[in-house]
Length: 306
Image (cartoon, rainbow, N blue to C red; front, side):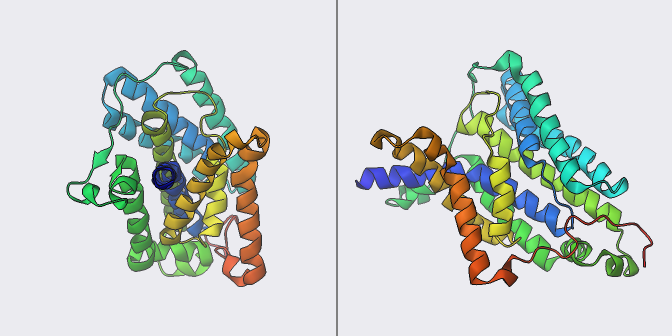
């Protein structure tokens, strides 16, 4: 029983890592006032780019850098549509998802089923990995795991304690006032969308070169949509997103543990999404004010408006 618990928690950390990366990026994006429903597509582009570059060069970290670059590049489309053209952000985000999924499927078709000859190895932190229980669960994980936690904490500090972070939050709450204070709202929103895209692509890279070490079409499996829900669940706070992401990582793992019990696979695959709806409902019933998003989330902004 002890071994099962340790194994489950360890796998929950692994499964929660891409959720944390994508959620952190979405938090930054939404705090600027831009709703990005294209997370799933950007994750898919990050996954296929990381896999192709890693397989071609034999350098996983080069694959990671290429994935982040691809994620940022494709996110410019959503930034252009939402900020410059002031298009409907829901439509633009959905279009980005379809574009990312379609393009990744086309690019990755020759690589389906091909395993990586070199993989991203786990890191065992000296001394800390020898701690009973915690050593295996926390201190013997993929580099993506440590990177996800560091970036989430850094994002919280950045948004709450730096001038640029305050500018991002102010453009999400009241861009008119921010503009009167000399803030370039368009620039801030472009930057936030692009950074968010980089985080989502990083999450995709984890899936293809660390989590599964292969590429198959649709490997994101709805994680991008869960990340969007987790952004609300975390109340647009990257620090809260840490435990929220790993909680849902545990839910992903539990569905596989329940399969031998004869429970319908279709029902088990629905568990993360059912849990998302239930938890959001419970939070809203407890205190609906806590679920208040940035005031101008999803609202286009015309420079010079008064």
